[in-house]
Image (cartoon, rainbow, N blue to C red; front, side, top):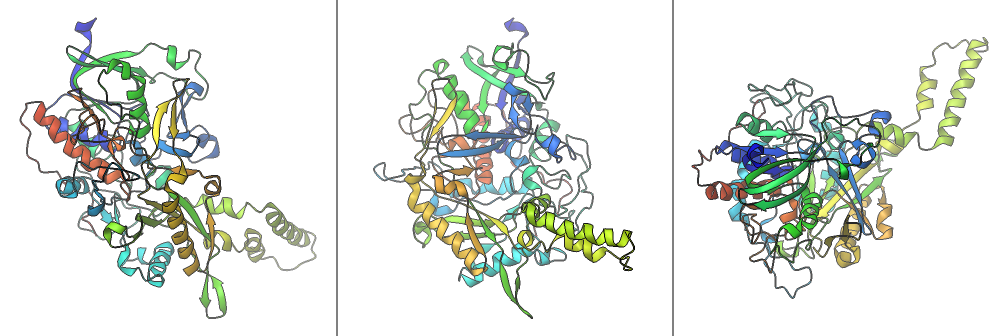
Length: 586
């Protein structure tokens, strides 16, 4: 049996910002790599849009669901992560911000919210640069047509000016192709890719449809499947989708991994045999990289800790939601020629995020713990849902239209042009066009703990009150943004229940200087377990403050160099190839 078991130099679990970077770097160094991703591949045009398809777009194999969104609900918070080839890049908002230099803190353990970063911004700089090149980071081309008329970007810039924070407003780098290399950005143009991508499909430049967070059906996002994973596959890495890892352990030849193959599953109905009772497949490798995300990686380590003697007692600690908070500004107005009129924000136009307002940390000359506020677009169909929410008003308008049509059919009206009446039936649409979600994220306290409950299921002990001062400061600033835009501030209703929704779960396998302080060292290697690495958001000893994707990828790039050195094989040139067919940063 052992002689027939497939053996690799490295097995990587997960294809998010950590796993994808590791896959390319290691394969490019000549190592034989196998990457296991539990979810499916999503080529352009495959992300669901209809209600019928969307209801199956969730991850719960026990119920026959193998979709994109994996939603977790815990006592203090809910988490949203992705399941698919490319991990979180499939549903994130493309922002590539670096963790602010002064927030790589090294605090006294006696301080509240203690966090110690064993790496510095200076050490990460070359890795940040490498990832930005590979993902072709570009800023929203706000000064050019037709992008300069993006209403939500204009509004956020105005809010920063009215708050006296012009210097802290920015167009952050985005992993989106707005135009081909050397050409002016144009929506909906074919992207030039000389070597293609692993899907073998043509991509289009950003069509400004606001669908980034539900999967881009046009391939405009420079997601990990088009960038790192395509490069990894060309370098010889084996990418296996529908492969859900269940267990792993150490043997003489390295690490053995058991995974469940979902490739033959009939989706849409619960399986006849529960996944827990289905036979698994086994492969082995000299080294194992866990990159299944904060929830996934920590769960796997907790579940298999009996096979890992000497694992740090700090496993599960230092969890945070990266200070995530959602709010809304509604029914904004402005002074027009005829008096007060709606301020159009048009949340369905543009990529999800175009701009960011940085509220500085006390470490950076501000006060309290810092955070970012970013405009948040959404798919255009959200506006239709918004306008249809008031059923009474909709029914009244359509009753008027029906009466008008009946008068014409009966010959009681000679006016055969009913365009104005149909427009009236749709409504003035002021509610949707003058409202916008706002996203905040920052440096909450990493006081949460991940563990297994009595049913061996993952749970989180996290309390919003631990970071009450931070969240109150964020709430006040969000309200001020709404105020200067002369709109109504609407807090996420879950906030009143001391709950938040995080799309940036971090921690659980924190970096540290020893097993007494963390689970992994500054190179991502698990203490007391040579050859076992963690390369995802779980290694963060605290919040990144800014969107964490770029920092996760930069750390993975750094970890890869350490693993390559330990493999005792020569590494090729450190030069990162430019992404194919994308324009230079604007």
